[in-house]
Structure formats: structure tokens, C-alpha cells
Image 1 (cartoon, rainbow, N blue to C red):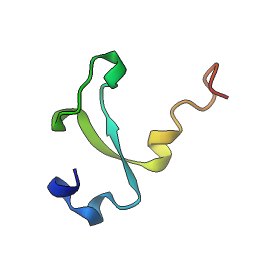
Image 2 (cartoon, rainbow, N blue to C red):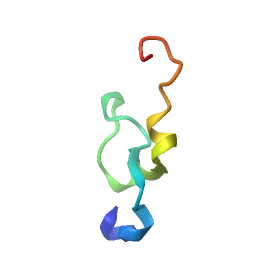
Image 3 (cartoon, rainbow, N blue to C red):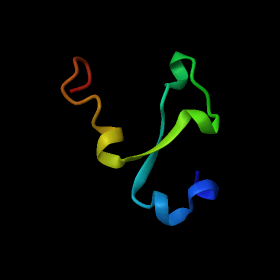
Image 4 (cartoon, rainbow, N blue to C red):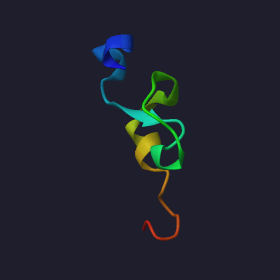
Length: 51
């Protein structure tokens, strides 16, 4: 992603898998996206077992 978008475009952001690897996703470029740290790391908050 750094080569594709440049370092400035992903500064302060996370690279996220659209389809999780544990559920059959892969590391191909089509399965990756750039998301803010807050959006990527907060998806579990409030879910049972992750508090």
C-alpha cells in the first residue's frame, strides 16, 4: 500500500483487510483498504468477550 498510495497518504492510518484472513480472505491488494486507526481498532468495543 505504501508503494501504491505513497507514505503521506497512509500516515496515521491502518491497513485493513476487507475480508478477514481467518474467514478466507487473503493478502492480495484487492482485499486491503486504508482506514483510520479509530475505525479499524474500535470495531470490537462493546461486543461480548472483548471488553
